[in-house]
Amino acid sequence: MRKLVSWIVLFAIYIGLVAPFAATGQITAKAMEDKLKDVPPGLAFSLSEGQESAETRVKETLPSTDPLTQAQAADLLKRLPAIKSDASDQTDFAKRVGTLPPPKTGNKIPVKFPSDQDAAPFPDACLLAGAIRPWPARQYR
Image (tube, rainbow, N blue to C red; front, top):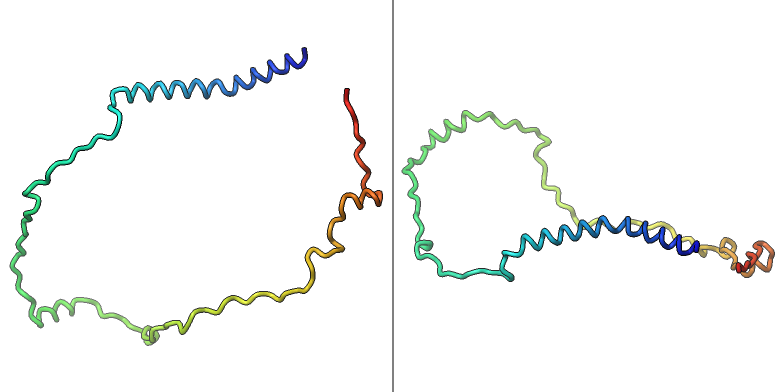
């Protein structure tokens, strides 16, 4: 009788957790079906010939200009502020001679890890030494 009651309680809890998601999924699926019922199946596309007028381009004419004389160019450059330079600004290009050497590794220590002294003993050896007592076996009826 206890098992039956516990199974009913577990089933009720399970249904209570799953039912809201199942109902939401059904509502979502129904809405998707309603939206897609008028859409024809498959991918529809069409090909057509290109237009002849697309190959002809209209070339824009550039406005007429007169080149500047040396005196006019010099007058324009005089209006700019002078570039202030420092003696330390002029250095040769610093190009690396070669690649960097690989990083140095540490020294190797010739000791086994973990050492035999630090290794955990086997459970059988602990049982023989009396360090661990075996768990008493119990039977339930």
